[in-house]
Image (cartoon, rainbow over all chains, first blue to last red):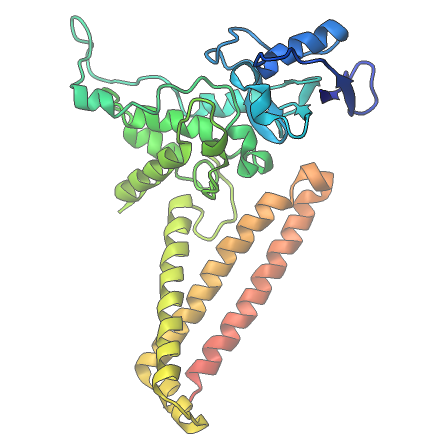
Length: 234
Length: 124
């Protein structure tokens, strides 16, 4: 199989390049893209990428495979390879540290902006803040995000304004706390998102939904934030 | 929160609502004109001037011109802030964006002034 890999080591290379490597795939056995990368690293130990849990939980190995963002550890090679060829690139739109490793500072700066933690100004109860099963169900499809960055780096609005547009991952978390019955900071959270960039720069093209490895729907969450902003503003 | 922006209302929510409301006005105006043309077969110039010169149509036309200007500015401003930025143009991005925004604003202002004047001067 032919694998074309994005290679760039800023200490050595003047510019990035795509380097072709070939690899024999075992007969009758399905490999994940991460397994493929491990075998490529045996050929060339200087190849760099992130990995940790290798089961789609940690969100470390988000890369771009034949043009589509996803987690290398849970993406079968057969699903992304086309005519025996696979092109691997780093997540688009973020600065490259080396090869497939990107600098996710901008992504986490935006995540931090939405204050992704529970804010409650009431005195804490003796044991815990309770929720009804219905209130808890409101958080389904929101809390499961693993912050791999696949969605935000597939979003042109985030490529164009990574310093101003929060991005789908951050906005999914923003709605996760807006929808939480225990949170009392909804008004402030909404006020912080009301400017022309933070949430309204989303054009609803749903690239984020298309690539999310956990099957989440940031576009729906963004729509709900807009609905809350309209309700609060009128 | 992102501040210091040159959007129409300096508020994302206000821009969002203005863009949608102006789109509704323009859709209704288009439907109104289309149905008038469909109902009145063999229309002549006098009938058209009579229709557009009525007080209600004059107000509706001015509202449509203003809606076009507001809708256009929000859209063009969004395109400018997406594409004209330091990543592509370096330190010149701010200058280019200002020129683009002043140019767009000027064109929209002239068209709006001309459009309002045109509809307002129709014989009633």
